[in-house]
Length: 426
Ligand SMILES: NC(=O)c1ccc[n+]([C@@H]2O[C@H](COP(=O)([O-])OP(=O)(O)OC[C@H]3O[C@@H](n4cnc5c(N)ncnc54)[C@H](OP(=O)(O)O)[C@@H]3O)[C@@H](O)[C@H]2O)c1
Image 1 (cartoon, rainbow, N blue to C red):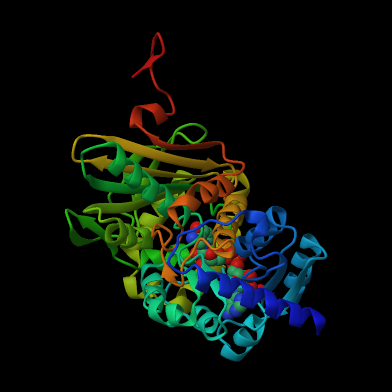
Image 2 (image 1 turned 90 degrees about the horizontal axis):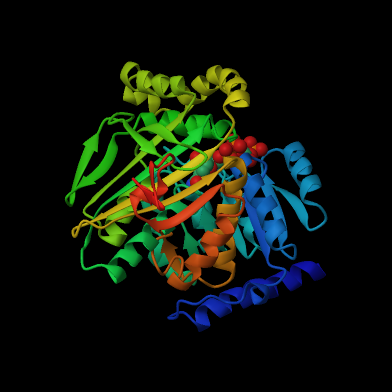
């Protein structure tokens, strides 16, 4: 009871701080930010949520971490990994009562209990607003993220800071895009014209079964991209390009996919031409994805229960291949400006299952530190992650990367540049 009372104080202090400095974009010193705050990680028994909980407890051992999900055994095992400052809460996100009860004494909820594709409601965000709890999700679905965004006014009225699409991609890649655009606007006379996201992940990236469902569900969605300001619809897993992801990853084939950062970057940063491509390894998985898109009707791939059956079928083979494929991940963001200036950012890590947790934890800490305004925001919005807070966020997310570079000309990031001597590479 005493603990509950003290947690109420932490919650009201966090919200009070947001209210007091509502109009400022600010970064507080991490050590001073909501000490002993309580963070509930929904999906904390899964790969992304579990990795987030571990990263949070490493970065801020003072935080009380509540791992939430439907399975007690998985919860107990995660609590054993995290140690004394953690506990498990049984929560089903479809059950509003259990959600609201779990959020009652919590300062921040991290929602990693996907899949987000084809979900009909934003139950966790609604409960967060209802219980006045700050919110971050790792959503990777366009429809879901814009539905979350439609709660902005309600979040403002409740004085709740919330971030949607706050993982690695989308998430850190949005912040990389925002920083490339900001640098180009301050350093050149040209206007940013085209931004392209390229992603590579070996196998499933050590992710849980949900990622397989996510991938199949995405194959059922037409790809939304922007061409000179016009939205165009393209076939999923088409438009292959061979992209150089630089040191440690090399050249990889990538294909068009419907990802939320395309629309948010177009609308928030005002870039006329935007697209996102993704590729995996071994190469035959790319062929399999192309074949599924061509052979299976889109309605089948959009049906969550049919996709779950497919997942059961494919999961053992995918896991077996994962053991050989590893889980390297790379994100490359390319920006082209009207004056011919091109700038590239690259983020590569040996283990997706680790860096997705670092990335999500970085967003969670930014919210706890007061870098987010009340409302619902995408990561590239300055009200979502204050411009001055981006550097700290990227630094936390980039822990353990094998290559992290920003704002470089394309020739400088090539995996195998030809050296002509005298330090000249072509
Ligand atoms: N933005 C990004 O960078 C990014 C990157 C990778 C993945 N993701 C997304 O992250 C999500 C999770 O992926 P993952 O690999 O961690 O999947 P996972 O290992 O299968 O974990 C899913 C978790 O969600 C929980 N869960 C599922 N349904 C639930 C419900 N109704 N109520 C409460 N908990 C529920 C599961 O717990 P129980 O089954 O025990 O309840 C489990 O802990 C996916 O949607 C994926 O697309 C985002």
